[in-house]
Image (cartoon, rainbow, N blue to C red; front, side, top):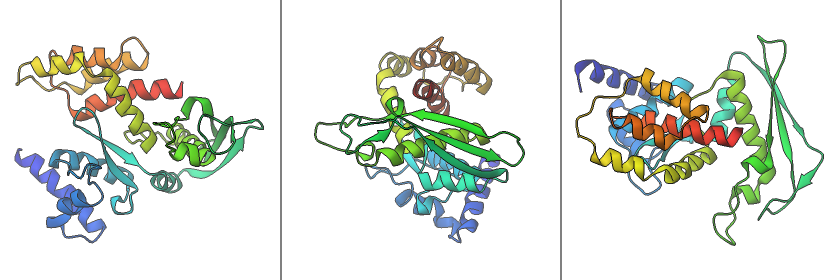
Length: 268
């Protein structure tokens, strides 16, 4: 790591530590063992930690109160996950935020495994101070509902269906209203992982067989190919296979490619 990178890393850690009155020398280790500790008990790498801190700093999210936490992906990377409290705070703290309201369908349905009926759709109406018209997003239950992973096992979509549909609608609306990017809710992180599992195979074989020293992929090239995924012209696995025959993709670039396909398919 060169001197410039070391200076940037130190300044971000110190800045973050000062915000929460934590000893900067213990900041990374503290987060690794608490807020950013993985579900399997392992700790993120320093590189993954810095990626998480960049996102947390950008949105002023507090990892100690679980406003942001780490979700490991299938490419040995990290997905920055923001809890619903974190989403609510960055929405309410946006200087142009001017309130929101929800609308609910009259019809209700009982999806597979759910404990009770839920609205077929929920709309979120979000107002900005600098716009004459609100942003309105409608999410349909049948497009976002997650059935139980195993027979007889219930998750939050089964026990709190109405609440989760409302949360999903609020998050998607805030993305359009304020342009929040690079962060995901827990439900999206799981879907990204599932998409990665479906895409793993050919791309991973190519990555294992390619020379160890390939140049990093220019961001403009990654953005160009991500556009192919977003428009449905190519799958994320095909794009990664093509790029990784010439370049070394970063964890963030792989995540953006996978997310472009997973989220586009989810919100269409």
